[in-house]
Length: 163
Length: 310
Image (cartoon, rainbow over all chains, first blue to last red; front, side, top):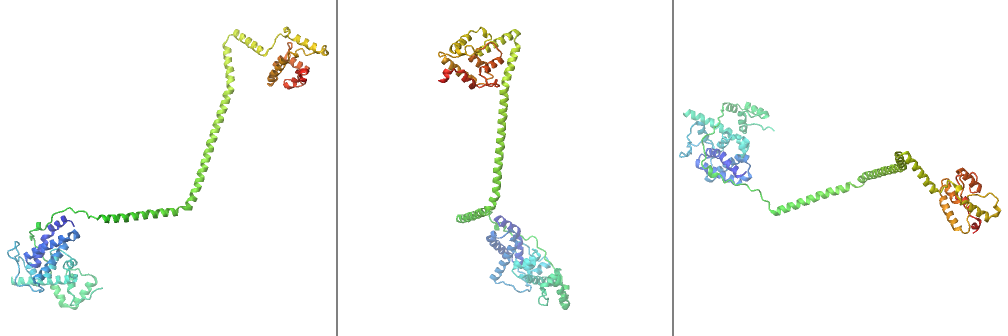
């Protein structure tokens, strides 16, 4: 694609990538770094990528960058248990208050569960596309999503009981 | 091949089963599995699917920093040596292609094509010859017509001349016409040396007298009155006269009859029939050959013996 088309991708997908990155890593600063690094990598390859493939390419890059960041900071979280404290940046411009139970439940999912659910519900990707972006099998994507939905239900029931 | 569903792998089918996307054999297999595993069936029946709603208002600040300066894309530059190489290959391919076509054309032409063309050439030549013949025939016909036309014109000329003369003659008065006829008669007589009054001409007598003197044996016989017998003195004159006679006699005798008589004899005023009878009598004309006498028949008799011997 051309540099003009690259700039168009910035306009079209930067906000959505940032939202996806915040939900994935639950840290605005990290999410900002992840998005910037993703666009820098994309710029280096933009002449070899078609405009129609830009969105998938960028989400895949964000996902990989996030994985690399986790490995680098040794903040790998393979646990599916919901953390007791939300690691949210309360000084952010965006108000990340848990406005509804569903959003709180999402934060309690594991990184991979949250990522595939976000790609499914926020971006509308198919299971196959999610598998390509996250570089796992389609069957595995379906298992993660089934478990994520089951977890969300349990969390919501728990929240309702505590409320 | 349908995967057998069991308690270990049922989760990868569960989400499609809940969303209604499980079809065919997979659906039947799932239903069999659920019938055999009521706890899983109860779990799925009690499961409520919750979907996340995208948060609105999340904005990435710093997009402009991510954007790059728009640069007009330059076309890919192919090194010149690559161009030469490509041009060389293209030239070789083109040459090969045209050579192949030429060779094919040469090989395909030979005998059949000539065999087809030869009759055409012969027919064309024949057509040319026929056309030339027709042209010549037309030209000949035109020439013949021109000749015939010229002949007709030539034949018409004297007629036209006579007609013109008649017209001129008709325009003159009777007196002028009479004078003209008289003049023409006189001219004709002068040309023919016709003496309408021979009795008054004395030139006959001396001639007769001369004959009588030279040939006394025939003195009393009836001699041709009009024959002018030459003398020794008159020999050259006679020969000249004979020559003139010969030239005149070469013309039809019938037409020049009077001319012959004029130069040979001096006759009295007699009719043309009488002239011929006299000539016949004198031996100038063979019997029964009136009007068609050759001069050679009478030439001998006209030359005196003394000259003939010479």
